[in-house]
Image (cartoon, rainbow, N blue to C red):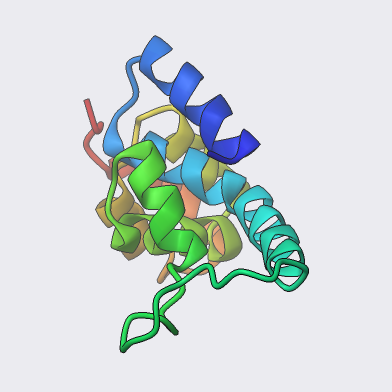
Length: 129
C-alpha cells in the first residue's frame, strides 16, 4: 500500500463526506499517486523477477485516476469530473463543492459558464445535502 493510500484509508472514515467532496480530495491527491507510480516503475526496472504474468492483461497498468477512485470510494468518472471542476471552475465553485453546497454534476453544468458568472449560478443551485 502506498503512503498516500494509507493516509487516505486511515483518515477518510473520520469525516462525513459526500461523493463530491471525496472526489475532490481524491483528485487533489492524484499527483501523489502518480509520483508514487513513477517511483514504483523505476524500482520495477531494477528487479530480476517478473512482476506481472504474461498475457493480455500484462500491459494494462491501472490509471492513477482509477486507483484514487478506488481508495476514496467513488468512480473514476467522478474523479475526472472533479479534476475538470478544479481546472476550469472558479475558486468559488471549487469551494462550494468542497463545502458540500454544490454536487459535482451541478458543478459540471456551472463550469460551462464564464468564470465571472459562476458565483451567481452557485447561489441558484440547490444545496447538495
